[in-house]
Image (cartoon, rainbow, N blue to C red):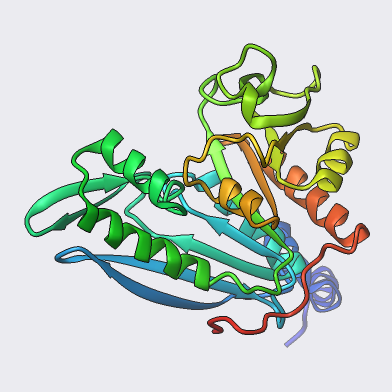
Length: 285
């Protein structure tokens, strides 16, 4: 059988350039991801029947970066973090809660609800329960134990905890911490950048990280660790024990902005020797 010269040439082109046979986007995706996460789910029971899945995703061999997502309705932060961790490695800790912000449970038939970022002190737990329904000592105890379990999953060797959050336009921004803002007394220093969206912020307990992220051109807030309201949040807990903490926060949907901020933070952490060493003394996968 005689093969037409054009078909022969075309066939050889496919052999020499196999990428012609598949979309370029697929090649790019395959070349970008360096780490596939090893995942583990811990099921924590709170109250009568409520079970909360806690998902740990480890990218690469060591937990040099530790990200924590507490609100299950803040998807953009998680998606951006995953895309960065696939390239740089690290660990992602997530509370899975049916895409809801508040966690609801029953104790002896009574319903309760709380914000999982208000559970790192009894004072904060009581206030959060009160804001969302009934409160009593037994419910506070149950939530406190859940908070303590979460803290156990953060290795002591991690020098900086990275919290992943999103917000809604206007509800929470760098303006909240400027003079006259409703959180102004919580901030020791504020760097507001006019060219940046006020809702996209870096919030930290660490002076050096504040200065570096502000110098990089992002809205930055340094928590006043002595005067901040004791609301049970993770940032306040870290401030109280003098642990480095950073919250990267953008509006919902701003994926590229979130990724840019997180990548810059990891660069700063590495340059300032705050990149955490491998995990020791904590639950591992």
